[in-house]
Image 1 (tube, rainbow, N blue to C red):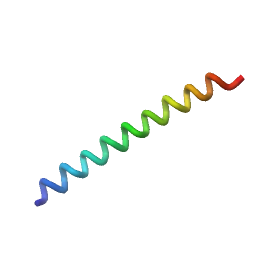
Image 2 (cartoon, rainbow, N blue to C red):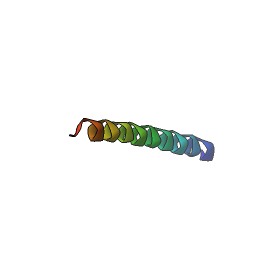
Image 3 (tube, rainbow, N blue to C red):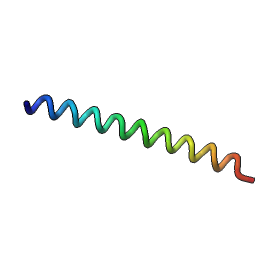
Length: 35
């Protein structure tokens, strides 16, 4: 049970970091396209 929740926690963190990095790259693209 403990291990299961731990795996889910890791999965959440990974998905969060993926989402964050995707946002970061989007922000960079936005700043590049702005005049």
